[in-house]
Length: 68
Image (cartoon, rainbow, N blue to C red; front, side, top):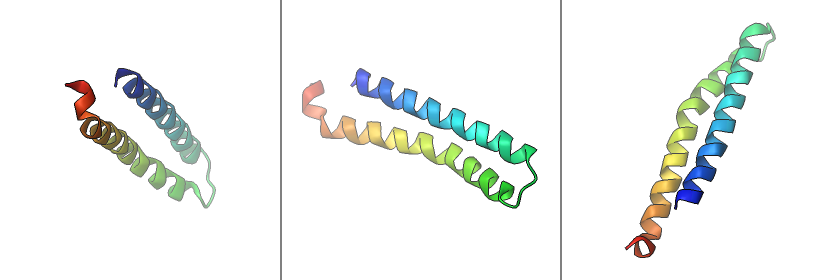
């Protein structure tokens, strides 16, 4: 479980870092897609940690016999 949790945490950190870079890029450029990129990165900043938490919760529930 710890190995999977670590892998999911690393994936989450990489995705969130990429989202912050996209947010900064969208804020600094004045293109027509800037607002859409900004809103998508803000939404994903909330959604990605929740999805990772759900994956770990489902994994924990499905492998309950392994932990006992």
